[in-house]
Length: 184
Image 1 (tube, one colour):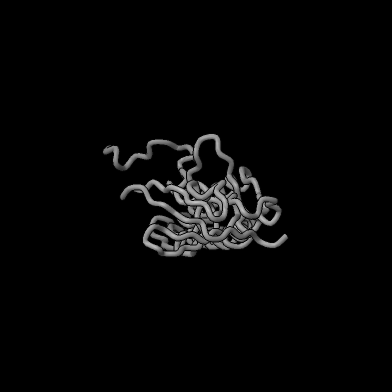
Image 2 (tube, one colour; image 1 turned 90 degrees about the vertical axis):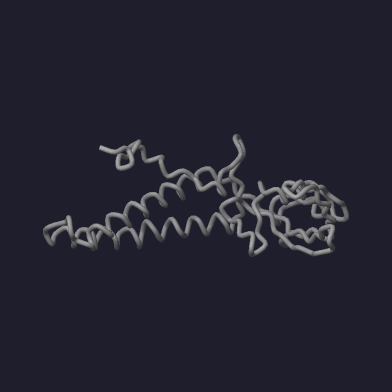
C-alpha cells in the first residue's frame, strides 16, 4: 500500500498547535481573564452541547444499517473527531494558562502584558494595540500576542520612549505615545 494512505502514527497528540499559537520553549501561557473565560466557554459548549448532539446523530445513523454509504454516520464520525481534537487542544491550553489581570499592574506608564499601547511608526502612522495571550490574539482587531515582534519591542518600554522593531524590511523606530491599562 502507498504510504500516502497510511497514517504514520496513532497518537492522539498529532493535533499539533497551529504555528501562530506555539509558545517559545519554557514560556508560560499568559492569558487575560476574558481570554480564559472565552476558551473555557468554548470548551464547555463543545463538551455539553455539540458533542452530545453529534453522538446522538451518529448513534441514530449507525442504527440505520449499512454505514459505508451513510452520509450522516460518516460526516458525524468526522465531526466527532474534530470536536474531540478541539476539546483536547482547549483542555491543554487551559491547564497551562496563567491568568494575568492587567488592571492590577502597578507601573501604569510602562508596557507589560495587558497594556493598550498607542504608538506611531517612522512614517507618522498611529497604531493602537493591546498585548494579549497567544490564544486571544486578533491582529486585525488590534489585539496582538505578547510573543509577536511588535509586542516584544514594546514590552518594558515607558510612555514617551522610542523602541526599535526589527522587521524583514529593516529596522523601524516606534514612538510610544500612550500606555493604558483597564481600571482596577
